Length: 329
Image (cartoon, rainbow, N blue to C red; front, top):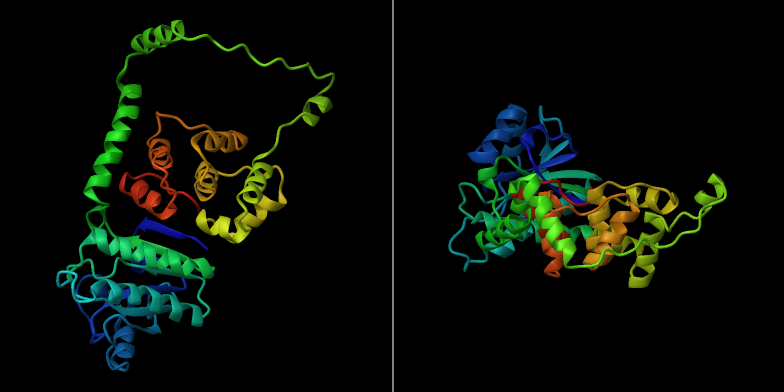
């Protein structure tokens, strides 16, 4: 199942298990830890007191008290000391251990905070990278639904250089569309039309009946998708996992020739299959969509495809940073 980055209060997540960014004593601390304990009530602290603490980089599980989930996994992240004291490995271990514990409890949904990025001082950009890399790697062999819960915009950031590059790319393509007057757009269109011939429409024999017209329908979205999977020589599972798509949704698409996906789902498959811009536009057309420079979402996805970066989790980080819908499901 996929990984989704969302902005929410983790104590209100209706999932099987939430992860608490705990301290080694597993007693009430500040930040996310304090919020979770306050929402869960005294029963959670009573359970934690019986656990005898927890090592940094590891995790332990308890009930959830008054929270809307079944369990709380208490993961102890490292304090940031400059990056030369094994912080990255310890942080990755927090996520991996928590996921392993959740699977042993047969949990299907789990929500994480951005561990160690608060009072423990782990740089947010690097903490996010560790979280996404570790979780996405684990999901290659797991069907859990994972949420990375960001409480507010200030808690989240992508690299300044990447943000600036995407912002400039958007500005170059989006601003012109939204600042030109209609008269200016028409003048520019006419000037461009004078410099290039307008292609004649392809000849098409008229259908004798409605049924004949329907019989002439082109390849559908699902047919093109399955054909591209075969051409790329990958398995269905590899494709839907790379697309950040739920297995059940992929099964619907495979079974229904006329399935109509959402635009984020269609683009997620284009990214998973590492399609060119032309192929991406063709696949979108099969689903009834087109890329537009009046849409920031489209421009951001286009930016990554043009750069040859098909890492869907990195694309989703950027989309989240610009308050756009995410790819996949």
